[in-house]
Image (cartoon, rainbow, N blue to C red; front, side):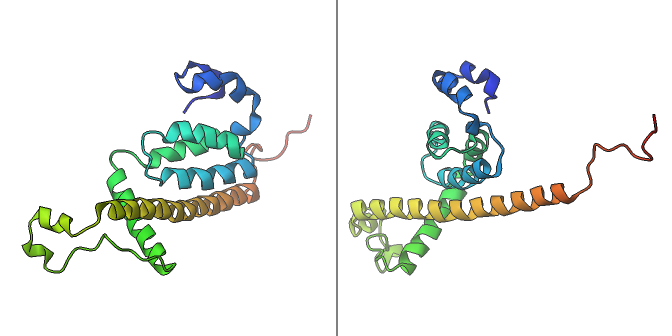
Length: 181
């Protein structure tokens, strides 16, 4: 992830270097900026838009006034190795949520006796535009739900960690008695 001092060296984001240096919230680790980065970054990470996530993370960090480093780093959750299981899970979550909300899921069911049919016959029974559209909606809804859950988990873990660090004794204090001058 680019540091504030060398932001101008990166090809795409370098064009925004002067603006990014002026906007302190992009680099702030205060609770509000971090929380926004957790939630918006997690939702963006689970959306089926791999490849354009980092530029979108920059724009989103500016729009919602969130920490760019956290929001951008969360985009690394989905990568070529994790994309298939993550998008498969978000599809299933989205499909389940849409069914619970009462949206009919037509066109994606296989016809009866599909195991004895050829591939052309199976897809001939499905309205492909409906199936593709529903698949995209399921991925988007599942990404939203999974992202909000992941963001909430990160927020809780961060809150517990910050609270625990604040409650622990200071580490900078010298051990033993304080020397008298």
